[in-house]
Length: 186
Length: 196
Image 1 (cartoon, rainbow over the protein chains, first blue to last red):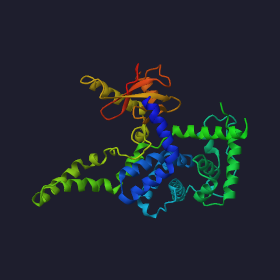
Image 2 (tube, rainbow over the protein chains, first blue to last red):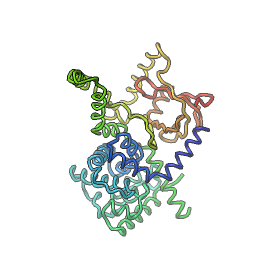
Image 3 (cartoon, helix red, strand yellow):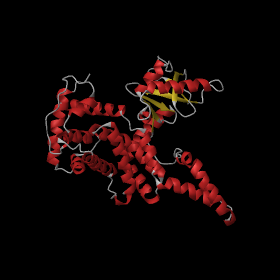
Image 4 (tube, each protein chain N blue to C red):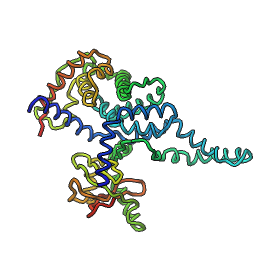
């Protein structure tokens, strides 16, 4: 019974206060440098950010960039403009650092070109691993789709990727059509 | 299947895939170790409790020596609990050891052998009651504080091979999670009643 009550409370608090909680935690961290506030912020966002970066790259790059993003958050905490958009700020840093990482390692090729809307690489018609299926999408479609699954609006995605909203819509339409075609639900 | 169902299916597939790839714990440790307050607060506390100026120089010298010798473990201690609403997930798996030792099963065997040796003096260093919430891919447990404990499927496979997981576990089963002295998960066994 205790676990059930706490579970309900946690779910309620999560949905009702996630945004304000982020802002409160970050304000507290910015003002006092409180490690516990930073730790709590990290716990809330680490898996989402890491998985977004993992979908866009590989495990080593995702881990490296995730760490760099949080170090950047610590370094630039005074630059954050509090508008209830901590998560968007975090993913914007993630997107930029990932692009920098690709450029530095000279992996910025055709399939990672932001303007590319290329065709899906060869894939089985009955793919059962969604993570692998995502990897077959072109970079920009994969990114738009992942960000949407993380709860960002079209405007947010456009802002994070620094492209027009109409471009985001197109990328999402391509991505969803491809995924629907190849993803077989059990 | 209509459009809405398809969207839901994609969202669900994405979330399921995400659960299979949690962020490695080493990232958090590395990030928090870069937090300047960690080192500074330790020094501030030490200085504040000194009795007088006469002791200051001596204590500072001893403190520096201690920091050099013992500082790293102190700084690496987990953060204390506080009143912040934090959604914590504890993760057990191999991600931290990927670079250091590719043969995971061999390493687990070594851990288990060490654990067996310790059993001569005490049965289990630390046992924690929990409930199995999900056993698809990575296993998810919920403990008495409603904290989520994720165990990677690779670790589960190896624990099974070593017969350290009760084969009859299903979702909703109450279990005892046994840890060794270093906090590594080494056994999962079913318990008859909830121990919380």
